[in-house]
Length: 375
Ligand code: SF4
Image 1 (cartoon, rainbow, N blue to C red):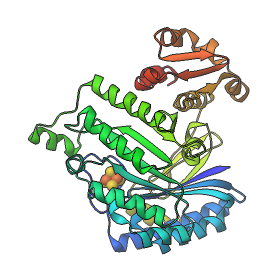
Image 2 (image 1 turned 120 degrees about the vertical axis):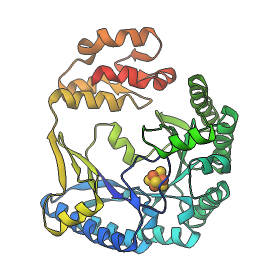
Image 3 (image 1 turned 135 degrees about the horizontal axis):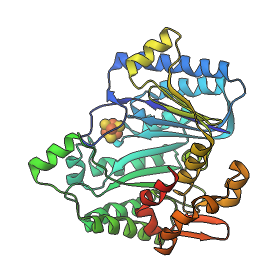
Image 4 (image 1 turned 180 degrees about the horizontal axis):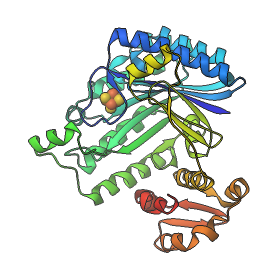
């Protein structure tokens, strides 16, 4: 079964740290984009009849800037083009300031059954530093509105290692999340890319990020608190109540196939990987001219596929089964990489037992150092 990813590239304002494929919301552009998206979905369905999907994910950007009726039309187009499972997980990323109880109820009626809120922090000072449009009270209200609208599967995104953030301040957001009780949480370390406007803001205001050891403590203490509260970590950055793991994102980490629709969306199918053109205008133009939207189409070599499967599989707490990898790729992983991996096992970052390979929690903090072996 495939996962479907649908990219919505619009935001009400551009956050000072954001490195995603997005632009400012314009009503007219949005209307033309939705029409193009409907066309791409129908065309993809015609070209690949019989594709079954059991997850569908609206990511962005800010997908909740689309009207519920537009989300409904996109879902109907997907149902017509693909063979959607009856229990398809349908996630909508939403920013707290864009929703109300009635709007969320309308998304739910349209077929969305999981909401993922970009909360980032439950402290107003931190949200202001990130130039987010919402405050902590709005985020709390949004979660309540989602419950009122009947959503039983809600995720929150939080970010740690924010400018001028101390460990105790970060843990306030973790504790607040636990009190609110979402089914799923994603916790990311803020990465500041070289040209981010946030860099200038930080220099002007003399904000700095806490030392590396504090970032490590933010991560490990948050995971410990969440586990004590009944959440289970299942991936480097994700925890969930049992059975509430993101089925869609698991496809990325378990060597699955997915189709990405919309500008800049990535796809992987039977070892071929491609990406749609990133520019919203160019995407719409190409659809209008009936030209392919895909750029960078590449068949991965056997080694690249193996490397990817190990690289992404190690993100999971359960790691990878070496027997499964062997039967899929015909490679004895330990024979091929054991010499390079052994120092990580000795250093306590990696475990190799009972035919599995997985990162320890300390290893998750240094995951890139281990994973580089496979790239
Ligand atoms: S809302 Fe999200 S996608 Fe939009 S600018 Fe902010 S971080 Fe980027």
